[in-house]
Length: 373
View 1 (cartoon, rainbow, N blue to C red):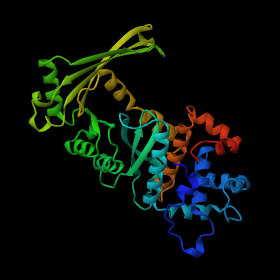
View 2: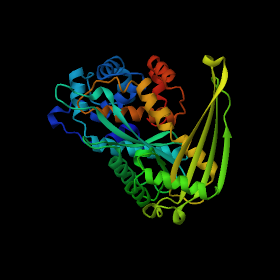
View 3: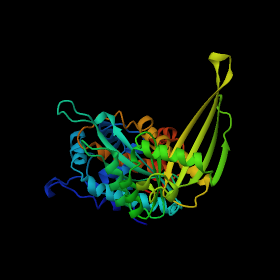
């Protein structure tokens, strides 16, 4: 818990020969994380950051380095980093920050995949890399990543990530792709519960949930009406239905204990019709393995799931320029380092990431004062 970031990164496997270890790997990784915290967008920008701030960095993190690394040297060091041990250190660092912020049993953990759009390599005929992240909604900490294998998809990746993280007592959420019996089994084996959206990829289950609602009333109901923002107002009605043995689908009875129906009614003032209100209505179904959960908690969980898009993926793409990165060799290493940086910002209660990066670029002491470093 009290280990500094550079001490934790000292556990990352260094694949270089002993004669080639002129630059400390742990220090280089810390410098890259600090570079991302100061708005660096690329490997070249990281090298420029280290060169300009080398005296301050050496004073804060003493090492035997006599000069900053050249761009080719920095890139060679990063490309040789062992992704497995770096991810293990990331998960340990994230777990301590998550616990310090009060995270634990009862937490909602959202899972979602993301493509690193700039990592494709046409010359070598390789597609873009993809990673799946686990995100704690309450503390806004990224808990871990896993690479999605080529010619595979997010489904086995989530099953593996849930098993590796072993988050007991949490409610795991994911989109409709992950509404699979094997995924639910993996979540329950790790000691957690699952709340998965049901769509057309499971037509029989979706039809069974609709039939359930037609023949039985809800066990609980929660209504929330949002404020009018940008000429838009949303009303959400969350209803919880008892499923299990009365579900007309035997293979799902043991896994779907409760069914959740979320009805969203959205009113918009449309300039095309003279600023009159135009109403739309959508219904979404969710399958839950948890019993006795309130409708209000499900309302928070279904809405909070989108934090992995709004608070993580959007920020990484727009403020930290992850999709714009054209790194093609070991792109997931830099992706993990960006997640280190974002977790440090969230641990220090930073909401406006773009503004924080701008201010950090002008004053490195702001970054060095952050908790978690």
